[in-house]
Amino acid sequence: MPRHVILVDPYSEAVEYAHAFRERGVEPIAVLSTPAPLRSYLHGWKPGSFSACHFHDGDFGELTRIVRGYDPVAVIPGNESAVRLVDALIEELAPGTGNTPGLSAARRDKWPMVQAVAKAGVPHLRTFAATTEEEAADWLRETGLEGQALVLKPRCSGGTDGVHRVEKGEDWRPVFRRLLGSVNMFDLSNDSVLLQEFASGTEFVVDTYSVNGVMGLVAVVRYSKSARGNRVGVYDAEDYLRADDPLGATLGAYARQVADAVGIRAGCAHTEIMLTDGGPRLIEIAARLDGGCAQRATRLATGDCQVDRAVRHHLDSAFTPGFEIVRPTRVVWLSAAHSGAMRNVEVLDAARELTAFQQLACRYPNGSRVPRTEDLFTALGWVLLCAPDQDVLDQDTQRIRELEAEVVIDPLGA
Image (cartoon, rainbow, N blue to C red; front, side, top):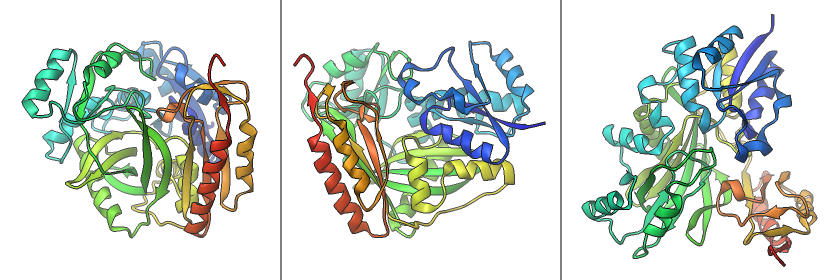
């Protein structure tokens, strides 16, 4: 009889789980937490990669019966949308082997997430979830944040979807009104809005894999981001820190505190941290693998990744505590300064001739409508670079920016 692994919401990069487990003779089964694929992830839904696909229609008992029938080696989340369903399935099938059940909401919803971190005494940003402008205004007065720079965002989204910066002295209410009641990228209504003090500094990601409450570092990544208007989540580049970089130890220790606070004891975690003058401060933590092209990039940079560690954990009972950088690696994100019709995407193909080139992904063919890049979901695509020499990465990055500037996007209606 074949062995199986259950992958819940295995959109986009999470399909790498299917390939990696199948290489070890384990058949991947997809379970979607919704009755139909999420619209914002249709481009990353590849049902042909799985031996079977099942959809959760709200009948948890029936879904549990289906999943139990596969006698899976593991039940793994591929996306934020899967986190709470995976927690519930693991508690039914193998109680005590997953993450702390009582903290499931804190691993998915940014409001209980911050509350759990605060309760644990971990340094954090002042944050509040408001359902009305009056609640928000009262909190801002009480905390002394009235008139200060803020970040407003949905509680249960991802990929910097809906993240807005409000400058010092700027009226936050128009942004609050736009977010409240809107539908985010997970087809969830934003019934409240998260307000947070703005933190200046450098943003990092700490990717980890835990086994039985012991966390192993997979990679530490420095983000370069820029703002476009009041949208602060435009990705520019990602670079990997060396294992012996003192910042890595500081950020790794902080990520462990946050993971403990929200009850992450097993599997992947993706922690975004702002390193401020006062020390590390949590942006958010997600109990799933790093997305985008992170698994491929991390394999190039370290020779390992979260997907590979999951396979070794579940099939070999193996645990890896740390990582080493074997090659300088960078992800260069491509963006559109305005919306319109793509005309000459082929100019980006010149990136394939670069010394450090590994892979190019562009989401839009010629003639398609392209949104202005404001977050991870609206990026044009990315270029993955890897070379023995950091200087080569810098030179090739400059050339990519030149190519990006040559892309013609005709304004809509022109």
